[in-house]
Image (cartoon, rainbow, N blue to C red; front, side, top):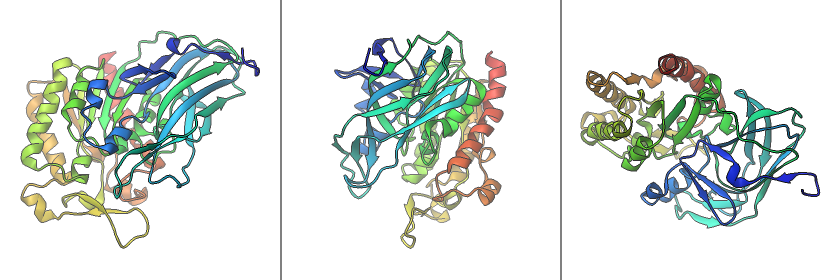
Length: 387
């Protein structure tokens, strides 16, 4: 027992949810959202960090502890060594509601900017995260890591034992998407739209949302193929436009191939293909998305034109039409495949009253709106089928 009356918790007995692989390091536990074989295929330094970040990763346990502490080594993306970073937010939830939150700095920096994409790591101190004044009755908690940080768990302490959570048989939902699904601009992991939807419906989410990296990568499809899942959703499109990464000729067979790979491991699991939410600059014009040089703040504009779309480049409107057609064709032989138009989650009318702060990414209000709508449009109807 420590001087403060807290007992060390055996890390090997911890239940980690929302990760596809748990690495036992020399110092502790490192949850991963891609398996080791896939991580070596990651093609750039940006995805190396964002795929390592802890979107949707949480510990699950039962305890009557009034105080819980974590020591973590947290790594956060930063443009340089001197910039002031906002604190990272950890959260405890009970029965789908946030019961406590704690902010802590990330000690290590992953240096990245589009001017200098080196991905150099500047090591820093470990961080202590503390929750206190919890209720002294046995309670089931989930402790959510910050979606902004790659987290290695070094130690856990509490003033009462931590036991594994009760078996609950929750529906397992695997989701893949872009920075919007990862949670960029949300206030915390529990405010990211996939977690909002999961907490609202009681499903167990694994969030494979990778900022800037929903590119129909084959290693991502194989990762999803190999995960246990009762529901799978795939939000496809915006990153392909952001990066001007494909033309329509390549896009259509890439979507088919992505779905074919997932179906190898999930022949009858419900799969929902979700097209992009509204993003004004690239609704009709082609990507890439670029920063408006006339503004002193982040503001995305289209780097292509409508004429580019006519010769095969991708806009969001073109992607929506293609996805709807692909799903319609495939669903004739695959009744468990369905399509949701992303404009039903956030459309032009929503943008008029709840604009995107940088003309590309949802703010906290829209993250919550998308989560609530996804829960109603997709999760609840499908839950009625799989339960």
